[in-house]
Image (cartoon, rainbow, N blue to C red; front, side, top):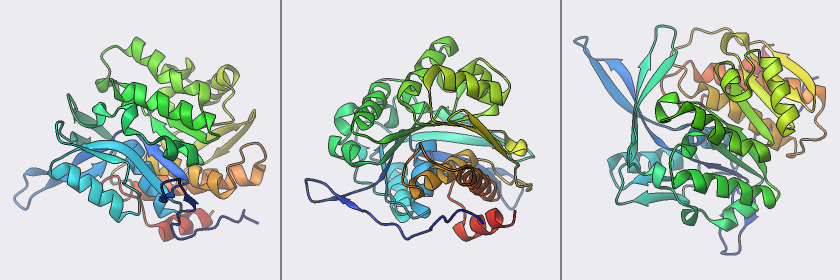
Length: 337
């Protein structure tokens, strides 16, 4: 019998001191516009704007899965900033803490797709709004009420957003929230990769749920093989749940020293942009549904969590852009195995 995972309508369950309802899940970091390539009728390459940014992608996927979800970040007072705000709000994300900055533009990225759907990025991020996020922009009440706070490493590339990100997770951790972290390495955004490694490793000391990709294992853990990388990170940081996504080889997890693996769903990918974010959202959804108790998950619950997350990632890769896949399709795929 499969574990009982409930899909409920988005609901906000806590009320803050200011009278506003406070969300259970908070994602913090970059939000930007991904320009996705397409072909015009006469064969020329054109680009269409899609709202992206890894933490923003996770926040809307978590909302689509029925949780109260908020996003903390900064956009410019421009057309693209408005597009970001409207897109997140339309997906059910609480955007009260998405700051509009009149002095810095919204970050842009151009996505380049290979024939197999794999992508690379060209960023336009110098002096943009997401980098200017400061600790003063982040509500302490939001961090104190959250059950889970999620970050990536892109917000750690520059100041003041780097200090703001670290301040936020330490504040939330002290308040009792689970901290989830996706290093999401983007080498083009770092000036010095040796210095980048030191910065990227800083959140690991207070991380409860970590996801790395197979391409990131050597850089972050000093080990190429996924299981050895997970063991190295567990021994050093004692992270309860460590996940390694391995593309066509599925994923594996180290949970309190026990290994699990789950094969991938075989699909013909259209665009893998945001697939890893949807995969991670599937993991976080299950952990929240199981009560955010990372000490007593059963083997069956971990295995189903990995299967569901793989289905989330696979369905996300069947569409253009980083939007959340159809949840009914995800459930059907997960139930097919």
